[in-house]
Structure formats: structure tokens, C-alpha cells
Image 1: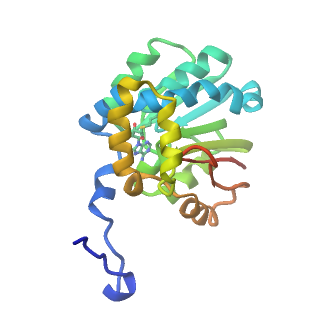
Image 2 (image 1 turned 30 degrees about the vertical axis):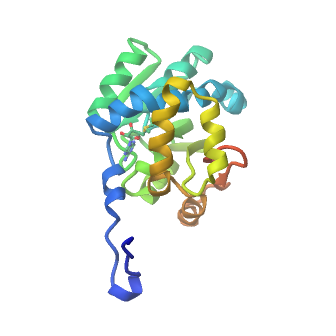
Length: 235
Ligand SMILES: C[S@@+](CC[C@H](N)C(=O)[O-])C[C@H]1O[C@@H](n2cnc3c(N)ncnc32)[C@H](O)[C@@H]1O
């Protein structure tokens, strides 16, 4: 029999997060890093090559870009190849991910990788033209605080593009996503993502309710065909 969690009203106070939430929040430790860098990335990297198409105007006009929760750093690496004029900073609080992103990015004067968290972005107000974050926001310890930090370091008229897995996606959307991945990774990724997405994914409704306290323009939406939520927010 499944356990029922008590409502806040029943216990008369705030409810501690469910165990799965604790495990997936915060910097990636060794095992999740290995899983993501060896298997998960093969599902997500297809989107990275489309960033040029999705953010064409923003990337043509940006001089500075911040990638929050950069993980292995593929996105900075790919964006730099298409838009070498942009000064890119990738931040991540995980030692494992910093090591991997330094390996992927190599020596590049236009890409800086820093160990830092969305909870406290080590930049002054209004530092970046464009901020992006892919498949990371669901891991932030306090998503409202992270969104406020992104808002603070984004320049006026700048854009924040954010994408993550949708915990409310139906099975047909998940199946469609796995159709575009390599068969070698399909089995592992499909098994693990399908069994964890309900507890680890993000929800557009929950993110939009956090946005009510932050003066961004725009909102998160659930994609119609793929199991992702996304937003292109303006300041
Ligand atoms: C699934 S990986 C995605 C990495 C990368 N953005 C990509 O799309 O390939 C999630 C990343 O979020 C990072 N993360 C966790 N908590 C974070 C936080 N508070 N601030 C910034 N990044 C965080 C993890 O360390 C991990 O590298």
C-alpha cells in the first residue's frame, strides 16, 4: 500500500520535502553526474543544436550570456561555435560537473566556467544580456530564490530562456522524446526518466506561481509534443 502524506492543515505546519526531492536537489554528486554525462546528455543534446534556431535573435544581439546549472558545459561549447562574439559564463555548484565542463570546453577565452549556485550568482546586478538554463531548475534548492537571482543579474530588456522536464507530461510525450535518441541509450534513459519524472520534473503551474513575486514578463508553458516545460522571460 502506498503511503499517504499528511496535508499541511492536518499537521499544523510546513511539511518536509519528500525523500526523492532531497536526493535530487542541489549540486550533482558523483553518481548523478556519471549518469547524466554518459547517458542523459544523449537525450538532451538534440535540443542544444536547436538553440541557434530557438534563440537566433537573442544570440545575434547578445554580448554576454550566463548558463545557470551548466553541467558538462555542452551548451556554452555549442553556442560559442556558432556565436563566437559572445562572452559566456557557465555556473554549476557541482565539483564533478565543473571538472567535466572544463574538459568539454577546454581553453577558450570566451567561455568561463565557475563553481557557483543559482542561489547566489556571483555577479553584479544587470550583468548579462541573455541567461539560459536547461534541465537544471528542478534541482535548485529554492527555485524562487534562484529566479530572483536570475532576474537581478539580467540586464533590463534582457531575456531568460529556461527549459526542463515536465513532471505532468503524459506517456505519449515521453515516448516521442525517446524516438529521437540513439537506441543504445534509449533503454536506460527511458527506464530511469520514465520512473522518476513524476517526482523530479518541474511543473509550469508551480513555476508560474513563483513568478508572481518576480517582475519578469512572460510565463512557463508545457510543450504540446515533448515532455518539457519552457519559458522565454523578459526583464
Ligand atoms: C541535468 S543537469 C543539466 C546540465 C546542463 N544544463 C545540460 O542541460 O546539459 C542539472 C545541473 O544542475 C545543477 N544544479 C543543481 N543545483 C543547482 C543550483 N542550485 N544552481 C545551479 N545549478 C544547479 C547540477 O549540479 C547539474 O549539473
